[in-house]
Length: 208
Image (cartoon, helix red, strand yellow):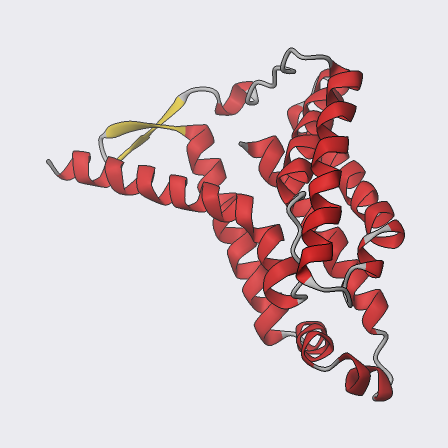
């Protein structure tokens, strides 16, 4: 009974952190910057394809993960520079319409590049099997997802609530004009936050 409870607790923790990884980037962009990004799921999808394609090309899961995260961060930078910085001061309806259009563009772009069939991505061989924990076996890769989720949660907390950069971002979202008058480059901060959110999308897509 103890083993069953522990196993289900780990399953619940893994599933909860999986959802957290999916939502972390969206929380940054909407929760802090008050910008509705319906295309967040599209960045997650594109990031997953980038990771899978890079992992197949390099024959290494971890190299593919790093390359996919970097590629999606670059895509996020291009999107922020070309579209999103024009949406920050617009109303939510404009943000919804623009990002919904991005969903359609992303879906068709992925279909054109990779086709209708999914690209397969396997976990690293070292993490493919189970680990013995307190007398029972538990998938090693799920433990990796738990570790990544906890690490990202701590990082986001320290970044948003405990760092000077987080204070600047929150101030810029609350009162942009006053923050800029104090010498803070709010536009550059928002760009960095959006790129970081896009990178989190790719990390979640590649891991999950």
